Length: 216
Image (cartoon, rainbow, N blue to C red; front, side, top):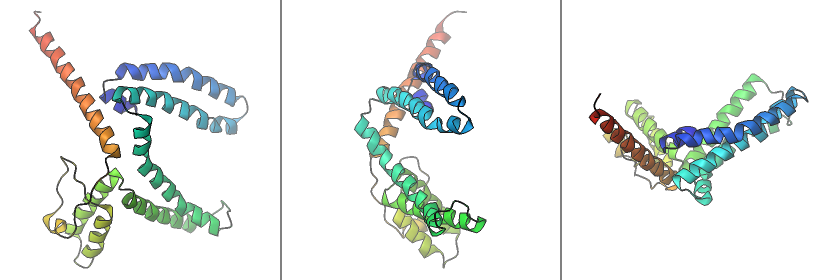
C-alpha cells in the first residue's frame, strides 16, 4: 500500500497517514499490554485495520478509486485466500478438530491447501495466474514429452497473460493452448498507479532541468 502511494506521488500522504494512525494504534497497544501478552497479541486485529484503513483512504483518494472498484479488485485474492484455508481445515476436521496434528498431517494440509490455491487462481482469473502460466510454459519446454500434456492442461486452466512487457513463452508451448481473456479489476488499479507515477517522474525530470540551468 505505501509503496503504491509513493509511486503515485503521495510521499507526503504517507507521513500524514502515520501521524494519524500511529498515536491511536500505540495507545491501543499500551492499554492492551496491561492485560498480558495474549491481549497484546489480539490487539493486532484492531491496530492493523486502523493503519490499513487510513493508508487506503489516502491511496484511494490519490488514485481516484471508488470503494466499489477497490472491493472488486480484492475479490480474486479473497477467494484464493479462503480456498487455501480449506486444505488445513479439512485435515483438522479429519483429526476431530484437534489442533495437535502430526508433521505428516501438517504436510498433507499444506499440499491440499496449495491444490485449492491453484484451483482458485484459475477460477477467479487472478492476476498472478498469468505469472504461473508463464512459469509453467518455461517448465513445459524443458519437461519430458510425457509430462508436457499435463503442464499444457494446467496452463490452459490458468489462462495466458496478455500484458505488455511480459516475456514470451516458448513457441511450442504457445501452440498447445489458447490465450484466455483477463478481467480488468486489478488492471485498472495498476494502470492508475503507472499513470500517476509517470507524472511524478516527469515533474522530477523538470526540476532537475531547472536546477541544471541555474548558475553556480
